Image (cartoon, rainbow, N blue to C red):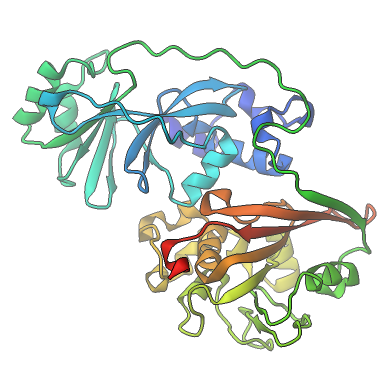
Length: 418
């Protein structure tokens, strides 16, 4: 059984990254994340943070490897591999002008769920688009023949120590004998031992490098009712952000209706067809509606059930798909106007991640997403969003606090200027 399979099936692991999270020993790279997010990502993704694990970045067409692991596998580096498209020319070192931004387990989890990184398991042929990838020893081999036999390739190039990436005189003929035209990826620098950098010196508990000075408020409220916006404090906080003339999408509307701004409108979506709403679709399918055009929404309100328990208790399970990876089986991804994983991979991306890709498709440049959740995360910064505000609503000890966040779409595309 593979290492990843044993971890996902509940196998025990005594590494430091299985310890309970403590904010006191939190490294600066994890400061922007909430404890529950860190704990969950450790459970689901820690097996990816082993030394030399490989990832393919489709948007960059690069292969990355995990190096310099520290803080119990929470923190690491993703280092780009050198590439050889013609074995006669040797390996070309990648440019270091654009280093990868992912350096911790939470950022890695988000990138995997968004499809920005695809794990390449050692010794297994992984199909991505029209190519296939095989990682073994120091090498990752890209081949165009997705019907190639991985066992046959392994027998030709694998040795007890793994193939030597620098020995092109041996690797090249082995691949040619197998009838394979391949692109090779190897560690940087090729053929030389990789030395892990020592752990960095302790950093002050002030703002870490890259941290945003986000306005944050802590507000006492009454114990929460079934419908979020029946609480006047939360409702006022949301409605005070509305601006004149805005088109607002309430993605999980429920029964409570918000007040639109002057000369503006609120489009309501609720999966329950008995509720008064403009649309009755799964939140992850909104971007596929003909009535909603790309970049037509000024502001999106996202208030899904805060947990699987709440979904079953308050909503008779009808919103369960919004908090569950398994629910993606019921979504018709073919209608969505952006790339999505294949049918066999839908459960790996997560339902909320698909919904947020849809939000990004619908939202105008400069628009905002307001999300209310337990965990405090909203739109991924990899998609070009910046946190503007955070509010913690505390029901004076009667229940868990709820976190509201405002994220603004800052990334612009060429079409935005036409």
